[in-house]
Amino acid sequence: MKKIILLALVVMSATCMSAAKYRGSKGGGDYTHALGFKVGNELGLTYKGFIFGVDGLALQADLGFKMMSVPTKEVVTKDGHSITENYDWTVWTFEVNPNVVYQKAVASVGRGSLCVYGGGGVSLGLGHNLAILSVGETPFYGKFGINAATGLEFVFNKFILGLDFKPGYGLAFSKKYYVSSGLLGSDSFLVDVDSDLRHFFDWSVGLSFKWSI
Image 1 (cartoon, helix red, strand yellow):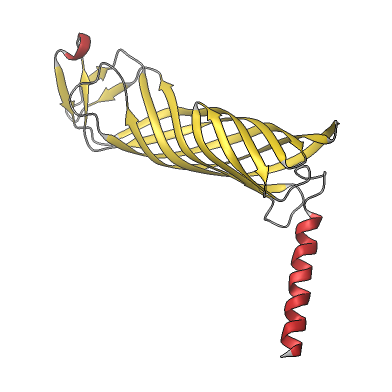
Image 2 (tube, helix red, strand yellow):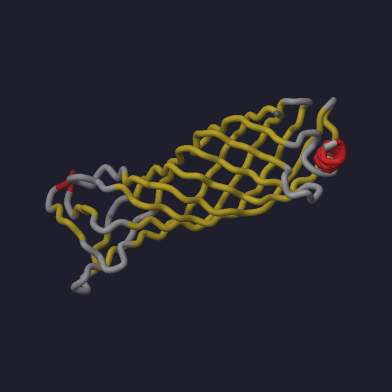
């Protein structure tokens, strides 16, 4: 039993020393895990943790809502006819967005530090079309995306202020949806497309407020 307890203490000590090693200013300032919230065109919770055992390599994960405006799209129906939607496709999504980023402190700011980071990840969730010229029941879409992630962090003791930009590619998919060829919903009809896919520029800009935990 004593040997087991001793082994457990050794493992726990090694784990703590490893975590401490990757907290240094070479990585993300002076924290291992941070949790908070984000505002911008995405609203929700955000987490960053240096959990991979590589100095400066972190998991950044966001969970929440995002609102985007997508340019005019062309839809091709089953019979081969082309329909152009003469309005922007405004969509909100509810998604989880995990990213793997490399972060490095580049300057001292008072008692804190300025860090930069870059990387990428994926997003999974649901989307909803809010285009004002759509009529009838606007359906929910499944949503998948890939994105780059880059940003700045100001680390002040336990408080972390961040600014990030995530450009990417999004894909929304649904079986059927309504479109309109007239003003405010006149001449509306249901489009049933073969692929049921919507491709769009998937992006977000956010200001985050996190606390070291």
